[in-house]
Length: 185
Image (cartoon, rainbow, N blue to C red; front, side, top):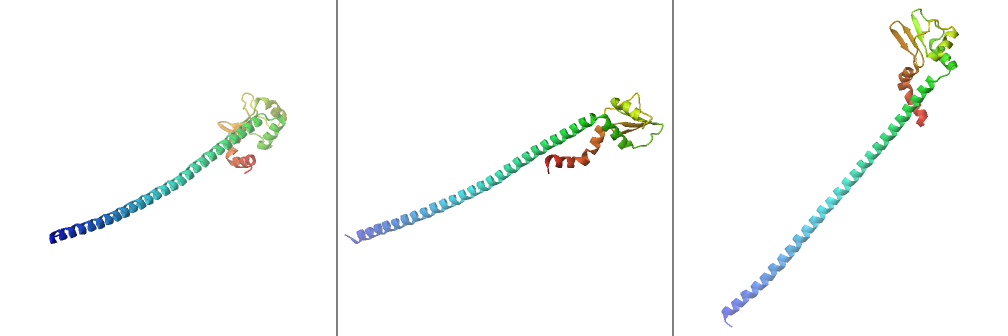
């Protein structure tokens, strides 16, 4: 073998060794890049999963809060309905009051005060006779009547003591107490 062949052989061997080193380094770099990308992908996946879990917890909390609000609103609506029905029943009972209780109510509201000549007492038709017979009130209207309670009319001024208006007037003041009794709050 000649020197030239030896040199060529040596260059080829060195080239093969160098190529093998480059291939090994390339393989190592590729593995590092792949590992890095896998780690990066795993990190991103973990962040996405954590974000989804957090959003799930928030969504679950929001749905639970909305359900609780809806349930509370339904309970309040049911309580409002019961209160309305209670006040309606109270009005019905007052409208159907007996004569003795009606006379006591009238005396309680008017006392023994004498009506002025210009004042007219307007009572339910069914109690007119009893009110006139009591002799307590001289000006009982013979032409007008009211459904419940009474009206006191003095010219253009009418004072309304009907059970409906009295109950409606007092409702704001007594509704809380009625609710406490009904719902034991």
